[in-house]
Length: 311
Length: 311
Image (cartoon, rainbow over all chains, first blue to last red):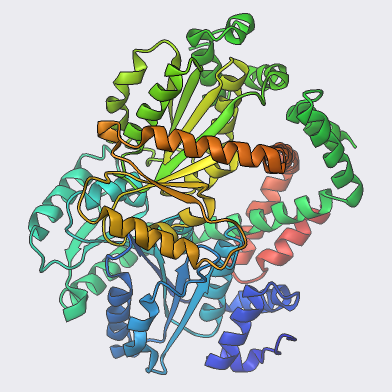
């Protein structure tokens, strides 16, 4: 199927159809995507990007849903990119999380898109960042990036977000597991969701203790209790996100974070091009030969790499 | 502290001290590491590499421990690399998994080494692969690569292993979560550990059902029940690993897997060099300038990348 043309003017005016088509271009790696993104780039940098991550079952979708509604009430345009690092063969169908998003999906002011890995985990982080740029250029003022904290995806989210919210539940050892999974480093704010469950207060205290003893100069992130399914704690969460945002803006940290993001993006593009330029058919053939020799123990990968670089 | 010299002859004879020093060279990215690895490479390819992964708390260390003991009983030399993708600031100290490994640690035939990320997740997979090569060259015949199935590390393990064992426990939804986390694709064999718990049979059936409906040509991996803490199911697990090995050897799949591994290694080394050669001080300066202009919306990352590549 030929890619459908994206009406850039419509997109700039926030047309959901134009946004959806633009993201499809990016997702399917259509050649037209790069030119479109280059055209849209000057319009980006206006949206605030909020990452939502945490272990499976923590209620991330419900929380995102509630937060989106809250921002909509203040008249802001909201976009949601739900990143699904699911295995290629399930295609995300088993997750079902998005089914629970219908409350906001019927609201014209919120654009929601799920992005799955579709067999190549590698390109997902770049595609996600590009989809967020599209939403930003389309005038969305608050953009949520939501992903389950497994795989590489939560690090990608943190890199792409201005404020990263890590959602936990008061189950025993949950915060320890979050620490193992590296969620502690990326959190600007913690939400202890399902706080109506037994042990919520102890879990918050345990988390605060861990954060206190990190032995890190950075100010410990706040911990907010929510029961997202009931809408409890949503005001407080929005307030804390706003505090983090103001703090980041006044300290210059937000500008630094965004500068690093642009720098990483350029580096990534350069890296992709260096590789694709390097691997000519001749070099690929030589690689095959080297691999054969290495398998027989007649050549090491280090020598083979040297040989290829000299070629 | 200056790196200690590695006695290559001692290493080839399996000296634990020489192995430990060699892995430290690799871990600390000492300049001498590359030359050593190139020298050792022709001695590799003799060991069989078994990856052990799964969610936190599945009992991976205990299982690895028992399997290692079993292989030792048949007179084989065994090595274990436990990869800890923990966050940099905890330094792996909170995991405590390795404490339970003392049974095998007191046996001279088993070399155990934990490798943590130490602040840079990026290099961990390469370092792990290099540590395995060192064990291989040192005459270890069975090498276990163990990691918790969070982060990128379980994919790295699967890429580095000949047979990948995914360990689950019969908790509700565990197999669904494993599927979410992409563990299904990488499994050559499933172990349902803690099978003395309630619901173990149902969990095995649910898993087999999921595997059956994958809609994939590949033969579904076997599911073995174990209670590793009691030593139950260990014989069966070893038998299934052996079956997978024999099948891989006779079909040529093992040779293909190893060829791909060498090819990826060479590509990785080439990629690292292309980048380090590219980013001269001049280009870094130009990058800074481009980032500044991009932040002001006067230049897109795509244009900046083009500019840098033309420079």
